[in-house]
Length: 193
Length: 193
DNA sequence: TACCGTATAAACCGATCGTTACAAACAAAA
DNA sequence: TTTTGTTTGTAACGATCGGTTTATACGGTA
Image (cartoon, rainbow over all chains, first blue to last red; front, side, top):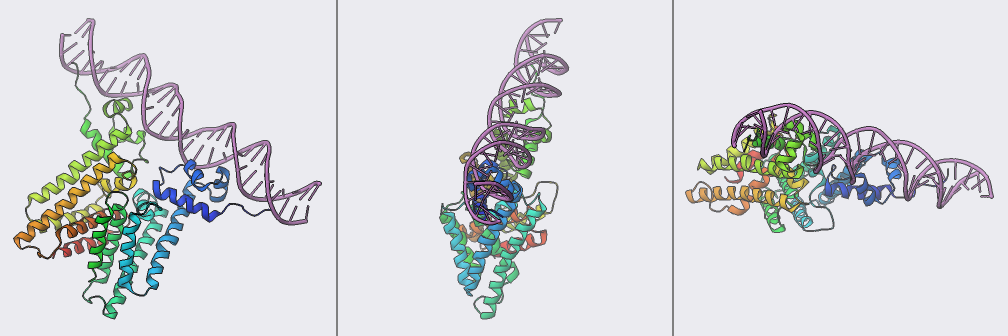
């Protein structure tokens, strides 16, 4: 059994993810993926099967390494109010940062593909549900500690906070400037006061 | 000067708009547009110039006849609180209605194209700015009438309400069910209480 | 060194992309 | 009826699409 695989599969998916994230599924061609991953055409098909499968892998990787990882990190603080503030401030800051594509890959995908494709929709839905649940747990924990008003409807406020996340991700993809996004982020903080 | 144009241009743009709205720019082919408009290939190019120009016309038509018209109708009520409630309830109801494409054509476009195309971005931005201004005017009018707390930051709350509109439009494109969207709509109402 | 499976580069596939060209059908104005 | 400009149907354009194939270069194993 000679020779192990040479190129880094995870690295290739990471680069493909950035291409899909930035341009969307339809507008990203195989040629784009070859250019961004740096691996050969044949190797790409051999390793991943095709454009569609590579997209799914990219979406799953984004969900795991961006959304899940970030939320887990915030939840580990065990200070929900600080976690919320950090989350929103990070979203605003990322909208002004040019090292990563703008917006949210999951949100973009929910609009472009999820409504026409069940497999993709399930991935996006699950991510959204977990995001909302993150807010809900934080609110409920804070309420038991007396850090947030017990009069808050945790489920409803969680949905609203998540909605503001979605909006910041949409508007942050080039339409709103950082200052306007910060106003929304500040209002989000105000919702749990 | 013989023979006036036979097919209805506005009707053709209307049908093209629905195709673009449902599938996006990239995923809508010329063949799709021919099928949805019902007009001939040559006529389409002769009348509109091409896919890109037809898309722009479609977007402008959507903005004028859907967003502008609806907001004008609501503002004519001269009862901002009722107008806001009607607006959000309509958004929720439309997400459960299958006669029109789901979501918002402007929001979809802001994600797919606006970040890469200045002309399109300007159309989307203008629509968003006017939508936000609609909320702000309503809040300020209500404040002078004593219908909303004068302590509200009108500009900030307007941005937040518009953010919830965006989120409902995104999540309403197939990911969230009507009940979840209604929770968000109810929270929106609560923001101006 | 001979072998074996992978990576690479390139040519290649049929299909479809957006767009153009053109001849025939057509309806009102002259 | 001739003229004029539009619509229509069809064919074709070059380019690119996603995907397959093939021959060659390569690097560990035996």
